[in-house]
Length: 128
Image 1 (cartoon, rainbow, N blue to C red):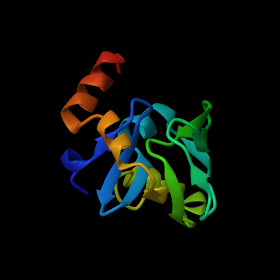
Image 2: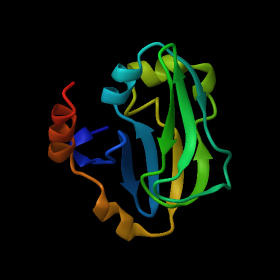
Image 3: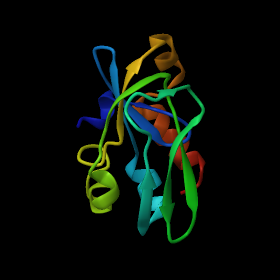
């Protein structure tokens, strides 16, 4: 996946848009910060998520981190194999490590997300 075409949340979720469907995952930056992943909890298809609210969590040996919805909409597909194959999240967070697909309810929310260059600057500003 071309990371320069993605949108990013300040909480390190990425969004790939295809029509009115957003594929959501977490960035390699977030995966690196968490390291040693041990568990991921994802919502079920059909759940409606709202921008800024938690839709799941990722646990590592260091901490449990909430996953925040970068957009609002209905979860239409979940990467059901991910909880059993966390190495996909580590090895390919922008591909095989995707988490959910959401049918957008408000595409205007995409304007609140960062482009790739802005996200890179955001990560550098966090001092990592």
